[in-house]
Length: 610
Image 1 (cartoon, rainbow, N blue to C red):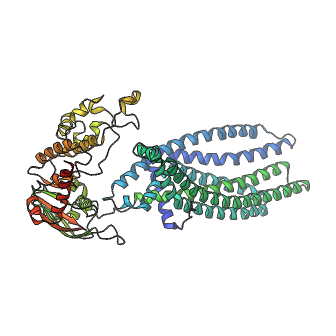
Image 2: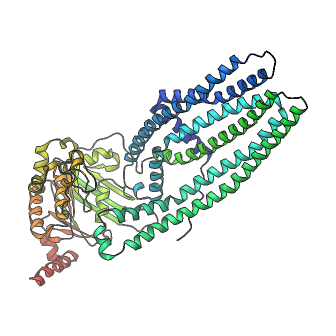
Image 3: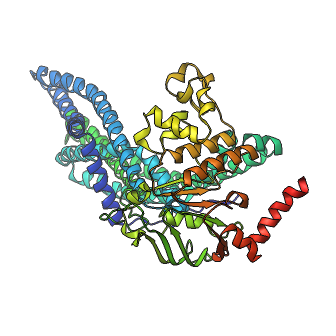
């Protein structure tokens, strides 16, 4: 186990002001009426103790004065007490409503901001993912910003009221009480900044702990974990991450204990000195009994208001510091330049890569090195090569998940960077090697390929038939409405969880194909290892269907199984990010190069088996 560093993530005043402005805008836009009512009731709550203190003084003074009328002040005390008792309930109700509305609005804005990221770079950046997770947590704690705002407003008003009362009785004691509060305020602000920095530093541990917890409780790794007997090992790793985070929290808690313990002792000493002065002044006849009562209430009220205000400011600063993660994500610039104008014309000429170089950062090696490649309209081009040759990276560039470090990719002569990304992707369909398995219904899993077909049973079934999965889906307990998950219940199955079905790997592969086939009017079809996980018979059937589908269409096919690409119009062989060969299957075999060697190795494996 390693100790968690407390980090040096310093947040300046500019970031803090931006966080405050964003928070106020969010709260006001999400719950205008509730926030206005909350602030009014907060002011009333702050005024109630001050009124009670003055009414108490009047009652006591009139009780000790012959023929003094006490009915009015006493009735005022009763009314004020009833109001003071009712206000917290109303304030809490409004606070809850504001929190829910603002949290919902914040969540929507956060995920809309995440969608504005054009590519994948930020989602492969651990620092951005840490910040995104903290921002997600912050959306559920928006109500704490309301608490901070109400605490500062209420504490400030209470402080002003009690200071005014105390000044009437003893200006010197007022100065003493205020001076004693300065160290508390400074200390709390410093502590809140330290805690914010600590929380940012330990987020890496919490994310890794979450990763291990998902492994240990999810179905994806359950079989392997039990077979290999690695559950205890992974659990130990998970607990180590929690222990590292807890160690940082413990150090912070000890620091706060020392500082706040000293401040509490200082506050008690000041209150004791004030009490002694008031008692002695009353003995000398300088204060009445009502004055003593008022003085004690004022001292206690000032100290309580100062403590409340200090805590509200410190907590408000802490919440704003935490909220800076949300603001950073919401206001983050897209990871790639985004063209707002332009169009993605239907492909009529082809796609051209001109001297394309790419690496994921300046510290990484080149993945693609000066690639020149044309994918003609209406042709099927296959990419083959060993792992790490750059095939999947090329697919990411074509889908504009990244931009080339150098060079251009042209769509009918138009640079991809000049096309709005959503319009470009509307023209592409794909099956990825790491295809998604959505914990949704069978129909939803297909319909996500084109949301316009989500409720069109005919189109869903047609796509499933072409992928060879229709018969399997039709025989499920609820047909296409059957949940393909046992993780949670969906819709009508909430009272009948046994209907959830988990498909085999090959069936999921066919479902991913159906999702791609649903986009049958797209200009480019990318098939990245579309038959992985299929048995030989199913693979043959799927490739037959794909050949029929690809006829006359522009397609890019990637596969380690060279028998699956032999009928492509052109086969391109990649090695170390470069094109080392290209041609038809027959031409490459005749050339006797890398393709011929790989093909013969695979063919020899089947011949030896026979």
